[in-house]
Length: 270
Image (tube, rainbow, N blue to C red; front, side, top):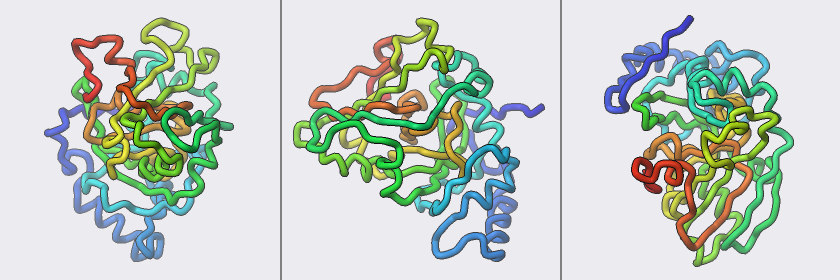
């Protein structure tokens, strides 16, 4: 049985997770063996070294991003076994335990609002035109725990630009799917479902904002927000909405779930 390492964000040091020399020497060894070349990180090859169950589908053509931190990631077991996803329950272990019935594919996302290109699109039309990147980001929760996670995704701005937002688009709003038969936490009024979040257009277009499709070189597990979620590394984790089914370009600041639930504690810009 593993013990969760919980730190406040300023206290995270790579030496406390995996010795830096071990981390980089392993990657150097893989490169020397021909597993990584031409600027591409073959995350699938690394995944086999991280104890990832074979049921998780490997992602192909993932390149290493220069935006990654040099800190060594937490383990796959930690990343996928300890997180918040209230749609599956309020406990940290609930998402992993209760998300087995969730079906992340087929998947469709509604694009609407202040944009020239709107409509309902499927997962492949969103993802396939882009090259996937592995970005190792620090993730922090408002509850004072944090992790270092090797996400795989696409810069959000590259996706949003394809829908040609107009000059009236000042914000981007996001919405999580509602499927109480598959997401048992939605059967209880813990929050006002569906979960909604939003960013300013400048935040959404920031080069660090990532539309995530995987972790550790494999497709995003259900408990981590499959098949599409956000990762906004300079904000608290609740801003990085999971299982996205709607992206709206708005002129006015959109409502956000935790701000509506506890406006005195959670602001839009958290």
